[in-house]
Length: 142
Picture 1 (spheres, rainbow, N blue to C red):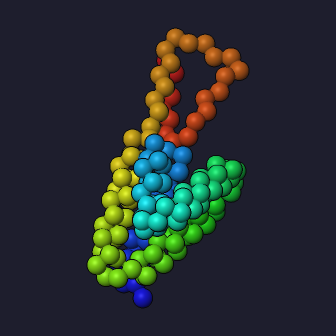
Picture 2: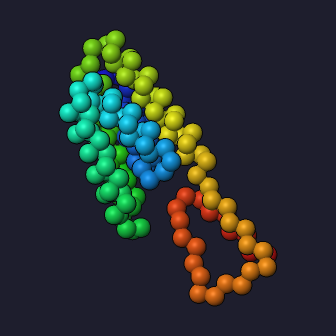
């Protein structure tokens, strides 16, 4: 049975995976999680990369009305996978993987903080236009 701190870490890891999908942090998070779950086995690591890619595809396909539910479901899936990994490891390896997971969470968080797009439009005329994107957008029309 995992201690509460490791359960919380696994939950944060699942959330970090979901939050990183589709951002600049994704490739680093994706690689680190696959390496962590693959535990040095190339075939397992490739399987984890495929699972992570399916997660991103599911999140990308979710409609705005479904997104929150889909994100929660995917975070739970990855939390469970991380809990199983941590539970199966001997104590020394568990602490090492926990430190690696904490670093991935911090990486995802740090990379996500810069997710901002700024568009400033001065003296422009817009007809039948739209601004599309994700993250935080700041649009200034002068």
